[in-house]
Length: 263
Ligand SMILES: *[C@@H]1O[C@H](CO)[C@@H](O)[C@H](O)[C@H]1NC(C)=O
Ligand SMILES: *[C@@H]1O[C@H](CO)[C@@H](O)[C@H](O)[C@H]1NC(C)=O
Image 1 (tube, rainbow, N blue to C red):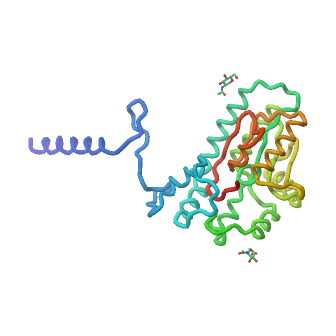
Image 2 (image 1 turned 120 degrees about the horizontal axis):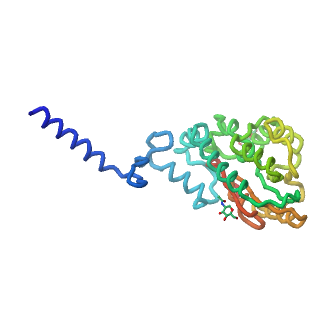
Image 3 (image 1 turned 135 degrees about the horizontal axis):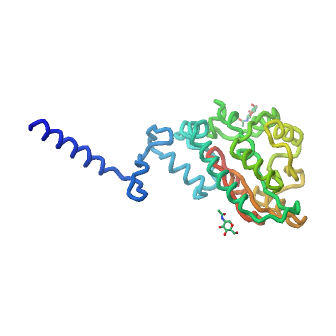
């Protein structure tokens, strides 16, 4: 009798202690225990809560930031190199594909989808992982970054390549619109082709006469496309400057980028 009383006590204790933590509840079933102050990799983050920082960056609450906080360098590294980043990109692609498949298309060859290149179609994660770059915790160096671009070895972001292929099969034409300087045109073309982006309606890079912020530059280029008779049915980028401004398209999609901000 004593043992069963003890067991009853223990079972009650466990049941009660399980009821205490805050839970996200869907129809009464807990789906995820909240773990305050821990990053995606599960590690404690002192001082700055890096998950909150990343959320602020992705939602555009945080703007015009120059550097990844030093205390979040490892967190951002784990995120970018880990499963969560891929899963987050896949989630965006899934929604975009669902949207695209549901469109009533005219099929007149004028329906386009705007793709940004860096951290959207191609990944610079191998560059950002370098010890002299530290996932954006070290100040941006144009010379070094351009040397990496000139290698033409950036891998595709698999989720976005999947979206790209689906759009092609639906008859929606891709247009690449990037802030990359036009002098890198040939290397960018070979890089895109090498990793699976083989066809596009236009590849627009930043020429000598293109001035202004990324928002202004991209708005101007999209306006030119619309004036040429194209209809932008979708637009995807990693920066908010890809998806705000004029003629952003019927729907915009943002893939994550906690490594840098372009305004
Ligand atoms: C599919 O298209 C219809 C008609 O435009 C729209 O009402 C509906 O919300 C769309 N569904 C999705 C998942 O986009
Ligand atoms: C940027 O990188 C280049 C090439 O490694 C180097 O020579 C230069 O000093 C760096 N600039 C700054 C400001 O660190």
